[in-house]
Image (cartoon, rainbow, N blue to C red):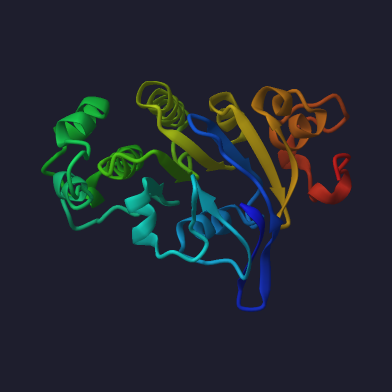
Length: 248
């Protein structure tokens, strides 16, 4: 993304965003609610095209391509809130995403998510939140993507399931060589899984660097990881993030 500005009506959400994700990388986009993370995803996949700037995928400019073209180019989205087809069975949710040669088979998805095999005939609205997230990831994999975009995969899940989902994300990256762009509020889990990270505030990138360096940054520790060397030890006790932003 190069100098991207995205609006909703007159609301200026993304304000000059520039970033990149390299092949084979897990990239984490971190930030609180309302900072523009989901708009970033929507801009990349073509749901909300930018007014200024450009988006490129490999050697192709995709700034204003329709979403179905992104899939053809090798991208897949796991949306926030899972968004499975509630009235369809698990098997039908997966089959609807499989088109053309070279795609993942049902057996490949079931091997990765054995619980989906057990519930293959169940309607998606009867699954637990964790199972629905597995289904959403499995559905994206059916297109055999080179780049997966995951919007808040930990949202609404128990700590045990969050750990499992992030383990699967890292496994897909390492074993299947799927590049990942991961939008998350759970900075601790995201940075443990990521190679590189960007932090967004107010529609802008305010800090970026290797995941390990971000985890050791005092401001990131204080405002995102619940630590740091200052008096305030918990992010939940902060009324406003604007109290201190040393990196701006």
